[in-house]
Length: 273
Image 1 (cartoon, rainbow, N blue to C red):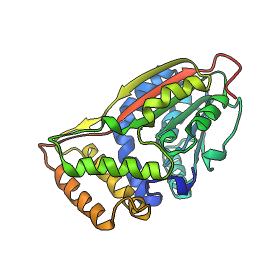
Image 2 (tube, helix red, strand yellow; image 1 turned 120 degrees about the vertical axis):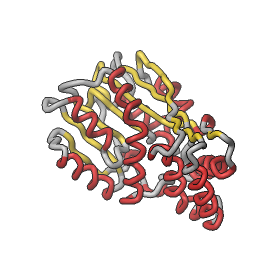
Image 3 (cartoon, rainbow, N blue to C red; image 1 turned 135 degrees about the vertical axis):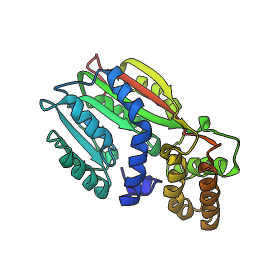
Image 4 (tube, one colour; image 1 turned 180 degrees about the horizontal axis):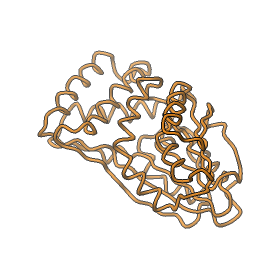
């Protein structure tokens, strides 16, 4: 994906946030891949793979007789992905620098996967169309994406509310939609996906768990874009980060991530191009 269309910070700082995101989303993504039937011998592509957390999970599932390709625009994150793959001994996964808005590989994969990629793009339907087109006959598409209208904390907190507003606005300014998860199922059907399924998850944390800090980490990582896009001042971003830090680290607070729509389905007819 093009850097100009992405609101979150890239490079090493962004990679650290992706580690936390993977920790939060890992269990529900694993359950989703189970439901979608991802297994040995399959060929898969992870579109917008970031630091390669799901690419590695896919590689473990498809095994030595399968293969996984991870695509992302950020070479720093992909370097991290490659190092981690080598460290875990995975030889059936590769990573390629690519702007996914130009990606087109019809009839190439048994599995096409994307997490939190559609919501960042202006032409969301075109990407979903290409994802379905990239499936071989009887291949499976697996998508996850956010809906910030369902985000919440308890008790109510102005800094958390402002963070949600800033994220939604800066993503929109970049051409994306922070509530695109709600449209994911419809976009998949419009692209010609068959046997489609939809589910919903929403990681929620209290106490002092590390996972509770994902919203705070996201606010830190969008601050530069918020300022550059003139959505809010640096001073306001700093204030929101300070107040959200205090709130997140209060063991009595409850912080929920945006709800996540999960859609998966098979391509059972020769269509989707």
